[in-house]
Length: 176
Image (cartoon, rainbow, N blue to C red):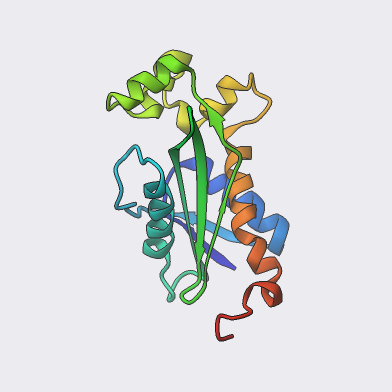
């Protein structure tokens, strides 16, 4: 199975590879540049749209069996703002979606993000780790290493695969 990830971020590519190999055995995973079509710091539904766009734009039927898009964004829930990562998987006819667990940023980080800065830039500065998003990620830093960005990304990828693991249950009513 050949899978395109709509990003060249090594964390996203590795997470997709890890999950696809656990689920399907062998999987050849390649990161490709695919535009999300949403702002670099998405909010709410923009996050889901970005993941879907990356999945569809990375899918090339002559080269890949599936395209995977991963996008993290901020969601306002009452007085809380959570970072939630979404994954979309597209195979040319079927789009599936999943998300990982969400978490809060420190108020000072969130203030800067709401003022227009990108989470990755702010968190890299706060953590003192250049390119934090391509390493342990904000979640790795904030959880003291108990959950890394790769593990968080794996959650969203696995959740997007749930319908594909149970196609009989999920294709009902879709004309299949």
